Image (tube, rainbow, N blue to C red; front, side, top):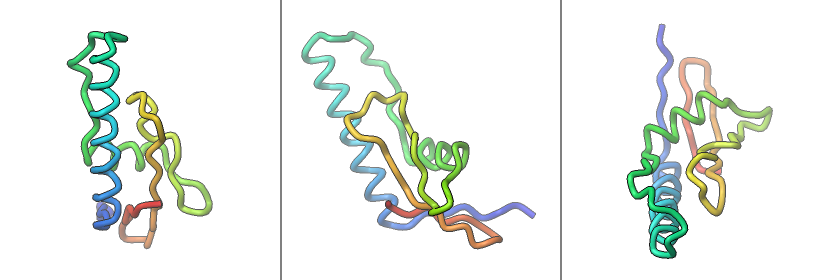
Length: 92
């Protein structure tokens, strides 16, 4: 049986803020002519969920080291609630 994966509204809002910050950081880098790679793919909700599931979580349910490849100013961190039949991702 496949486990159900979901996320809370607070996870969604935190993820959207992180994605917005990544876009602003990319614009800052491009505007300063530090790089010309304007086709760098920004994360989306699905990428953040996949990263959380791939990297796993610690004994407190926290996921770290997510989205290191986006050169953001802060990491995206979330909490995982594993209830047996499924997993719910929440903001940290």
